Image (cartoon, rainbow, N blue to C red; front, side, top):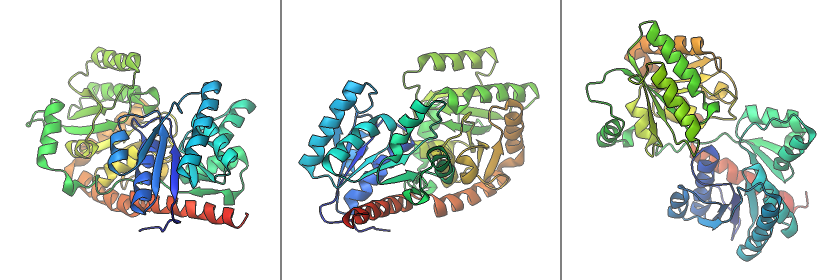
Length: 392
């Protein structure tokens, strides 16, 4: 699904860091697509563990402190970006977060370079100042929303003309998230690393994502306690994610698990580099977010791997999870409802979970490929460049 690029096309994406997350993965995917299409891909960022993947794919790192919200640093970043745009003859600037977007927008305006921003999250605003801050993502040539839920929010929040925003759902790397490519050795290695013995036949439930309160870990701990109290013991819940410096929150979770007597039922395993194998170690995945996620890649990746998903019934998950077909939707923060949903999934049995997983995989592969996302993004770039060329 190749999209032709103009000759000598150079893309500059601006993202706070390249540690882990949906915006970061999308940055890597699009950079790779630009390189494969014959262009150059630069990423201005503080850096992070995903830098190696960017460079392995042919992208280039422009390291600078774009994660900073300090006004003086942001002005300095704008100057650095102006120099970079001129030196590298950048064709288009694409910002993926608000604080860096200010520097990127100023630099794009100073150099007359087209500017695109992706609304990766739902930025709520209780004050005019915060609404103004959020609106930086709408001040360029085009806004990309990562779901219809996000698009509706942007239109409602900023009164943006409908033609200035396009929905491009996040994509999943369907080569990486392909059960056929995950070896038994990878699965066995992860089980061993997580301390899961070969004879542990409990239903394994994966909560993948960084350790932050909005991901809903406390709800799941309470739900697990209710399940155990009701006599349901056929489960093991895996919290796979980095605390990213939130040691107090991790310690709070560890204490809660210990106090509830759930040390045998819930494991905190830290960052996982092999999420495809993690999906296959487990029988289903959960996304118990307490605030709406704009898309929720961690609801789509397990489905691509043939695993049903239980997700909070808000945000982008209502588009990516079909209730009762590819998984279940549950009220956010409702521990009794989550206990009931997980119990229902466990009692559905392996045959039903496998049937739902097959449907989930087929749908994810049809709708959420990284290839389709990248093609649509490059098409959006072409649209912006053509509009600029014709003075629109």
